[in-house]
Amino acid sequence: MTSTPSTMKADTESETAPALGSLLDESATGVQMSHSHTLDSAPVSDTRIRNGVNGPSPAPLKQTASTGFGANMFWSSLLSLAAVGAIAAGAIGYLKWQSIQPPKLPPGFASSNGRIEAIEVHVATKLAGRIFDELVREGDFVSAGQVVAHMDISVLKAQLGEAKANVARAQLSIETARSTLAQRESEKTAAEAVVAEREAELVLATSEYNRTRELVGKGGLSEAQLDIKRASFYKAKAALASARANVSASAAAINTAKTAIIAAEANVESARAAAERIQVDIDDSTLKAPRTGRIQYRVSQPGEVLPAGGRVLNLIDITDVYMNFFLPEAAAGRVKIGAEVRLVLDALPRSVIPARVSFVSDVAQFTPKTVETAQERQKLAFRIRAHIAPDLLQRYSRDVKAGLPGMAYVQLDPDAAWPAYLEVKLPQ
Image (cartoon, rainbow, N blue to C red; front, side, top):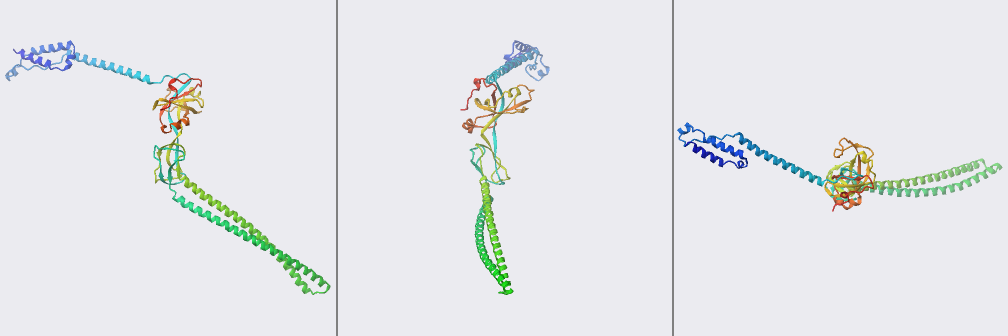
């Protein structure tokens, strides 16, 4: 009578066990049956009878060695399945990775990785000054000669006005010098006329002096009259010398007037040159794109004051695009200037862009960390530059971007045929 309730209680607990029990093998079932037998043979506690409990409570279940073995078998199966799945997934991933890798290069070719680069150009102010405005933004496409910014030219306008006034003043000085020259030429003419007059007077004084001297010798005239004629002769002679000196002075004055004209003309040219220089500074204050390209940065903003040579904008020349890559000595020694190159960018893996070698360094350098080499111990390499044709860049001018990584494949043997996957395929 005491074992019947215990048996029923054990059977109920067995029916409500977790679903995992159904996955265990027959040994786990045997454990449950043995466990039920243990419950059936458990004695009734006197204390529970004194408390009026109908029948003894089942003893707590104790896990046996057989139960632990079954659980271990279950988890081992799960781990085995997971390991098999991981191996299968890894194999599938490896096969997929292998499928997207390019085939091995045939003989006569070499490859290396690099980045698309372009010539950077700085738009800078020629003179110190304040930025008046900027007409472009970062990323804008500009053409060579396009106005991109203005500098404040208020001071330059004032200087230009002053220079033009100096030009007018210099031109007036030319007119003044020419008038002075005409005056000096007139004075010379008058001085020459006086010379002629003085020469006539000297001739007369000489004749009178000679006759008087003869008459005095014959006793016809007195010595006093001879002295008068002698004084008149020397006076006329001195007057002629003075007149001739005036002619020489007039000639010198004419030369001075001519020199003044030349100086005035030079002053005009100098003033005009100063005005033109200021005008050039004003023109240079209108900043223009030196090359066709794309604006990368607005280095300075409107209102900022910059020194001479201060950078306002930075752009890249999209007509001068190339890729630098590195090759070991064995391959670099076979690269020729003008050799064909194929570029495959990571961003356009299905496109093959043609290029040509434009530069081969004659000095080896340490391989950059971004360059992958076949042998880790290879520490030196030669830099190769491959330029993309300008006409091709012109067609894709708005799609050119610097900094894109990719692979460069160079033809070492001119007779080697390009593999099919490296045939030129331009982006659509």
